[in-house]
Length: 305
Image (cartoon, rainbow, N blue to C red; front, top):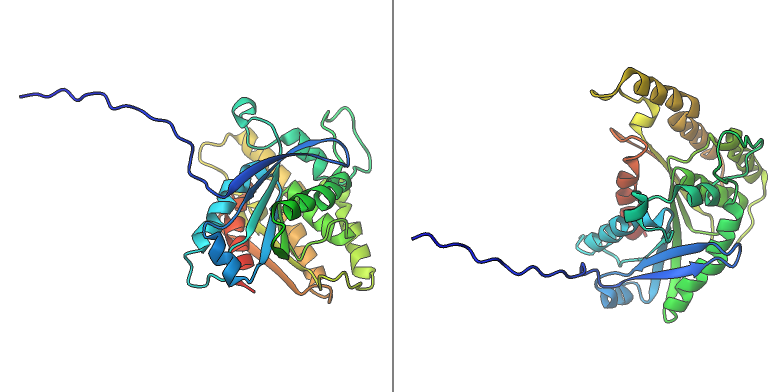
């Protein structure tokens, strides 16, 4: 006898991400609106106990694109045999709706927030504003860090890390070299050193030439990384001649891997870092390397005390 299956009722519930919140924050610097997403360890009580109430915080740029990835990396780490306490994840993003813009990235706002001023502005080349990095870092220092302190008044904030990719990584090394925003660890994944005629290298030179000043945090740590296919791109099987040549020329002009290698060689001769590292992710290109870098950086941040 044939039995027709009865229709099953469909229920819709939100994903069970406990310990996550979103805060809409207006910059006291320039009035820009931001979405600040925050997550805490799944076993918050255990982290408080293991870390004796001294909790590290990691701040992530392009927050809309990395918040859940970063949070889940930290949550999985709670099962690690090397677990020594979780961290608070603070993703600094934007208030746009990705379902409308069809992109997790807010290209217009990040292009302003994460970039150094251009030496010569070609108005005909683009209508996107750039050069607002100092305003943005002031917002991070004044507003975002203050939000974290308000949300967690009963803890002591321990080490603080700052992670950025591409323009976000340019923002991170700019923060380090200029001292505009203070962190213990700077993670710079594929920094756009090429931007504004490589003007960040002038900041690097000034940083290396300055005396070490005790800021109360000790010497900073810097980790530089990029994907191997940024240095030696390969042609995709379905890529047209025109598209491949355009991509190859862009990679050659921007020297992503070469610039990072050169920066690392210069910086490693200094005594201004508690730790300095460089890592190349084999098989990753500019877009994919952020996933690999997040896993490596957050694992190190949580396990290497």
